[in-house]
Image (tube, rainbow, N blue to C red; front, side, top):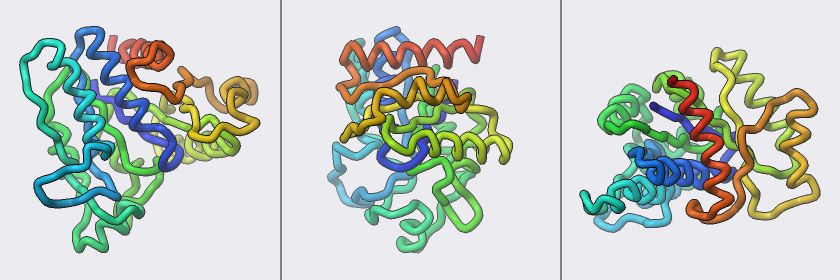
Length: 235
């Protein structure tokens, strides 16, 4: 299974959701590998690597399957494209004098063999990766088994989900699954957006992820709903 985790924007909780899914599969005895092929705002070179980077967090979660079996040691996996500037991927690549190649990402992801491969994109679903490519083009190029759209449970999400799903459909992407992620700063709409998305006929969220550790019972409960959804797609 290849699961693509995309977002309605940046900082919406994609990494937290992806890490929780990976660790939930591991708890079920299924190896899942987490990858973020593009990441901005991280140190691109040197021997040290930021343990708080999204890719480091995904890779650390990926090791939970092996740690339980004491079969491997932990080695940080770096993104294929890592840029120090915290800007859009296409702009970060331009400033670094390089370009992001979708075929290279497809090959890099394909090198990782596991029953489940979880790939997180950088930024929103339509964040540009180059002059003519966005994350949507990357999703299509990777031919995933399933696509999961993460949206923050805060004011504006009704519009953001509508716009993301509408444009994705118009550009040929099958309807992705949707989850909500608790925001860092809740507002008056937090907690009501899931029911409203369903009531207005915009989308039916699969789960709502709390802002808690991936091992927390509420996080695992939300992840189990997504795992069951994803596994039904391959039966």
